Amino acid sequence: MRAVDIIRAKRDGEVLTVAAIDAMVRGVLDGSWADYQTSALLMAIVLRGMTPDETAALTDAMVRSGRRVDLSALPGTKVGKHSTGGVGDKVSIVLAPLVAACGVVMPKMSGRGLGHTGGTLDKLESIPGFRVDLDEARFLEVLRTAGCALIGQTADVAPADKVLYALRDVTATVESIPLISASIMSKKLAEGSQALVLDVKCGRGAFMKTRSDALALAQSLVAIGGARGVPTEAVVTGMDRPLGRAVGNALEIRECLETLAGQGPADLVEVVETIGGRVLRLAGVATSADDARRQLRNAIRTGAGRDRFRAMVAAQGGAVAVIDDPARLPASAVVETLSAAADGTVSDIDAALVGQAAVLLGAGREKKGDPVDHAAGIVVRATVGSTVRRGDPLLDLHGPDAARIAAARAVVAAAVVIGGVVDATPLIRAHVDASGGVSTP
Ligand code: URA
Image (cartoon, rainbow, N blue to C red; front, side):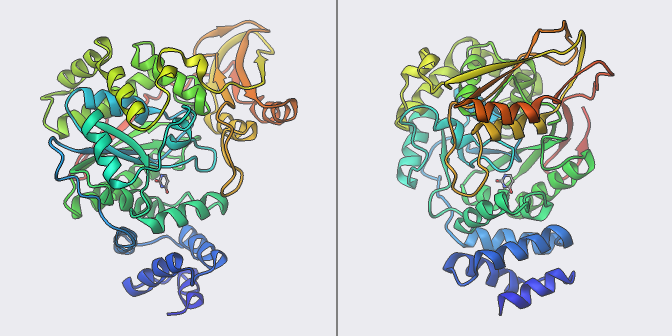
């Protein structure tokens, strides 16, 4: 089956056969498809879509491109978590040690930054020495020691996704429900978890801009998980504003440490407690939302979550000294503050602009394989609904030099809106249960 015929078929809106989808995934892996052919097919999929059966076939082909991790030797319930990606989304880094402290094993293979959104692996690698490239045996060992592990996909897990993900990042082919569904679920199914909770981000700073698209993605993910025997729930959460205050790798690790110490920003804590509550209930270790919240707060109050984080960092080769002394994290040479140009109420902070500016500072990638600057990023100092006076600090820009700061400043200048109406839409938008039922909090 020739690549050009498969590309043409999708370009013309045809439904691809399982054989065509398998051929594409095989071609991507064995190199017989050139990057430009794969990219052309990806773009055709973005524009033409895929049926649920095509999406399931793509997911299966991507799972089969590698092998599934076998976690059966590990005691305890293994629950996975994944986010569709956002700006300042550091939930996994706080959540995994917290649920581990509550008795749930969280094996998590994460991704790198994609487009204007950050990646858990890039964030963790800002801890000196932290290794994300563990093989399966070491992954299991870290899980046994710490109860959680945050690593990159092992070479064996959905290798086709690795190639496709990197191409999509630089060819404007991320925003597609079937492609995101197959990408996430192939990794999650191969990762070996017994159940899954997915955080589907919705809004300006997310790949899904509207509630209805986010819900459609959530339902697509839940359906694939359920059909493959892995009970899956999804929570749709807002991503119009950055989550928390920090955007950028080391800056976000610092905020995670504050959150594990009980000093996290309210929005981040709300998402952690919501997703964490679902994880604990799916695993059967909490009987209600209140019980789950109490257990998670207890894990923060007693320091048990922080201890799990420390154990994970140590087991993955990271410098545990940063946990007690975050000043050891990488820091930027230049920090500049953007100040309010007028008095008034802060009505909005645009996550997409903040994310784009963070990439310009070096916190993300502009093209495949670019290195990231772990120190770079943005700290949002204004909060929506607060009153500021002209000259008050709104954002701090952390970068390596004046040129990058100037480029970021030009983009981010319009991100903080002073005056106007505050959008009071709740952060938690909807929940999709394992049978696909939707509820709104
Ligand atoms: N996260 C993933 O793992 N894949 C996507 O395609 C988008 C977000």
